[in-house]
Image (cartoon, rainbow, N blue to C red; front, side, top):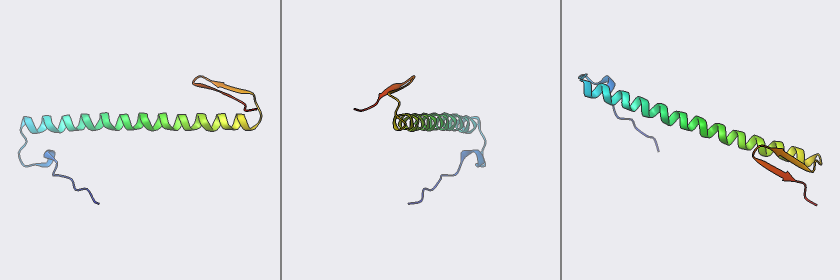
Length: 76
């Protein structure tokens, strides 16, 4: 399903202080949302990389892999 956007107040014919304030608020909210998305994506990528690195160490036979957030012991 396609999402449709409402006309942006920024391009409306009337430019009063209320409209400008609204545009600024939306812009700040958008920046905050985008920043949260970037942070979450980086966290997910870092977690995935740590798991892959731990699996690699596990496969080559090390008894433990200790890296700041977890320790993985070799199964017997």
